[in-house]
Length: 140
Image (cartoon, rainbow, N blue to C red; front, side, top):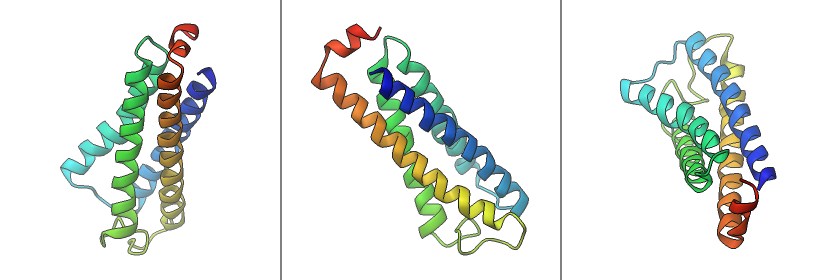
């Protein structure tokens, strides 16, 4: 279980760093989000993975893995839709002109990868807890 916690930490911390770079690219290109999108980014994409990660190191491991899996899945769906499906200035093929286009495209792809990785690792961890319930007792 400790390995799952470490892999989750890697996923969340890399995701946070990539998110910050992606936010920088958004601001450089002046790609604005609506109010609800900002709240979604703040709550689901930024805070929820950190909360899930923090819970992994407590007696609430199962809850932490669920929060992490749901937040990473929600982040992946949101990012994939707005970066690759819905045509808008937030779509990687319809960005406004600017020097940060490459950074935007690269971080959009890296976000998808880290979100998928975080989702998978959280699911594997959750499955391990259910397969071997004593893991939660041993690693406390």
